[in-house]
Length: 216
Image (cartoon, rainbow, N blue to C red; front, side):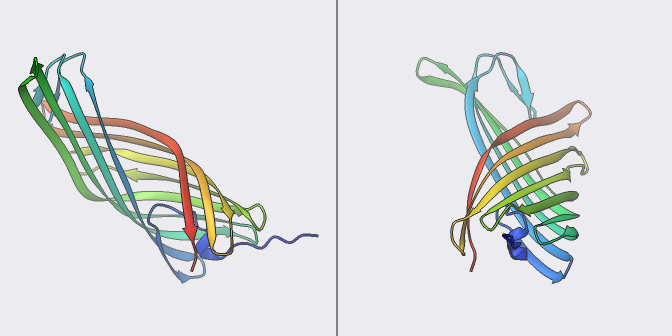
């Protein structure tokens, strides 16, 4: 009969981007995380629109750039744990730094006729909830999953940030492991700049993730 041993506690915890953990009691853990997202693109717009008080007319070429940096500090509690797996629940505070820019350009031949740029950003401490867990299939394979909700309600801002990230990890050696996953992220926020003007961001991100972990 084969016995499967659970990986050490710091490997059970689902690996996230730039994670720092501190165990101070058998069932309690303080976790710090940082997520960074940077995306840009360009296209010609089919209709007039306004961003950050700037008007962009139909037919112009626009360059867009979006940066979202999220910094999280959570207190997690081990609600369930046995020789194969663990489930943690908890929450804490996070800071979200959002920066978006849109640059519109119109050309007559090779000459640029006009250019305008609008930006919007927020930096605020807000509450969040997170659940994560892991299950050891055997000595080599480990299932991870994490999901969470982050409030974006602050002063003139209203919205939420939610994510789900299932993963499968394989221990290559005693120190090295590779993790393949798929991440789903929904980001929805509205910024009321005045009674007649607001910026709204509605974005869905999804795609595969690949991580390599080294344990000292």
